[in-house]
Amino acid sequence: MSKFKVVVSDWEYADLRFEEQVLDHPDIELVPAQCRTEEEMIEACRDADAIINQYAPISSRVIEALEKCKVITRYGVGVNTVDLEAATAKGICVANVPDYCKDEVADHALALLLGWTRKVVIANHHVKNNRWDYKVTQPIHRMRGKVLGLIGFGMIPQSLADKVKPLGIRVIAHDPYFPTETAQAKGVTLVSLDELCQQSDFISVHAPLLPSTKGMIGCNEFRQMKKEAIIINTSRGPVIDEQALIKALLEKQIAGAALDVVEVEPIPADSPLLSMDNVILTPHVAWYSEEAAEEMRSKAAMGVMDVLIYGEYPKYLVNKQVKDQAELKPCQPDERYAPLVK
Image (tube, rainbow, N blue to C red; front, side):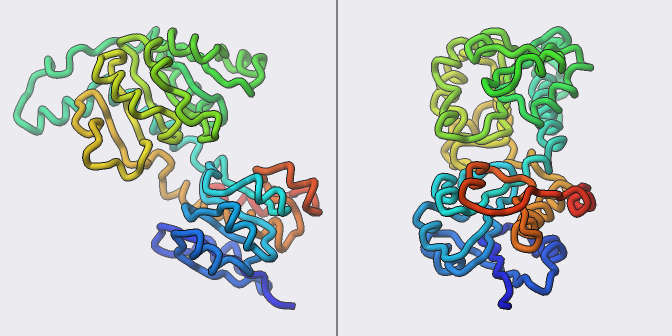
């Protein structure tokens, strides 16, 4: 029997040691590649049994060229690099790793909230430039009693809600897919997007990037926000209409923004956001800790093992409709996934 060919389409790590550890099996051949284009993907992956993917495009054209691929796993939560409809039609399982950085992203969102509200970046800049004067941070307002609005109420925003409540912050959320009763049991009120914009002092974006969420925070939403409001984004840049955000900041419709993600990454050198004192920017780092990186890479590789070696659907199957096309067993991953949680 020939070995299963597993292609790592692209990665930005120093090595593939965690993937190699998980995929250390006599029936698997791990093939590293560094694809950037559709043509490179087709050349490297045409005869692959599985693909581990980071940023390289897995479009319908690429999927059409795949001869025997059974599973595509993605580093991280988002699957916007993969044409899910095309993969499903061809019976290819698509999996992600939705739980590897729950605390990291929630912690980073909280850090951005605290850093902006307490004017930490501004104060640090002035002190290092020989200006010892608290008045450069004015105004600072008390956080207790304020309202945090969460756009999306999955694992990460739920974690953030738990972290801010001891600070005396009330939490509301907008998520049309989350059960109202479950949110209430967690002490969070679900509201419409308009109500969230109108009521919130802090807004934290946690929606995935989908056709339905692209640009969902635009001019209409910014017009409804409080002038003292700040918006935080640790999800995907295009969920916010960036030109509308810049306009809202310039016209003082809102007080500020704290962004770990932007519409185009890396951020263009001519972006107005770079010169705004009321904007904090970090380089898409919210997901990162050493432990989270190891867990993400190991679990992405284990999704391949689920399908190729165990004959099961991957634990983190995204396109559940593929079950009409593929014939695999239900996943029973507890024992083999437990050592991967750091």
